[in-house]
Image 1: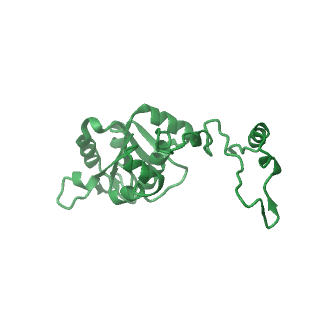
Image 2 (image 1 turned 120 degrees about the vertical axis):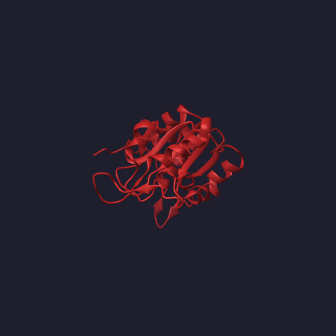
Image 3 (image 1 turned 30 degrees about the vertical axis):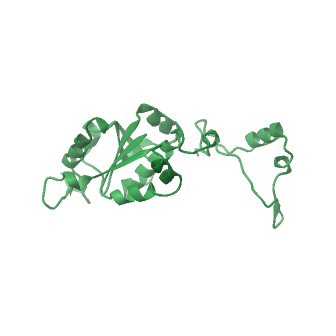
Length: 217
């Protein structure tokens, strides 16, 4: 799978994919990362890509022109285009699966400041996605969250594919069951005995009974 990131801070993206499981996946060619510096597509000598808001209001917006030219530079390697924005669809495991299955190449546009010119949303993207009902200072963080989640669907990313079946957030809104490791007894806090007996069916029943469920209240 290939991810393009249109960003003002390519180093944020590349540094994340240099370590841990993501770093290993990039080295092995399981996922491919491409960063596009938005300032390279400014139409002024100062590489300015934002401006004040028509009608007034605080802050600055990313201009539509640089975003358009950055996307055009990708040609057929653009794939599906996703804008990270607090106004988008709320990201969850079901949406992650849907996006993953939609294209082998995805391009993420990171928002900054007060966001982006609405013409980007109207004409240049396939989806607008939010990672939660809150505001953060950089769309790069949101893009990395989405990319990391999608990467876990890619065969070979996790190494052991069965790990994906027991993810903490599955698509039926059940969360992961409690898990324990050694020692058995720590300060009087002990591991449930059912997990020690080797009876796989009893362990399965215990885990299913003790799964947490999503609380929407």
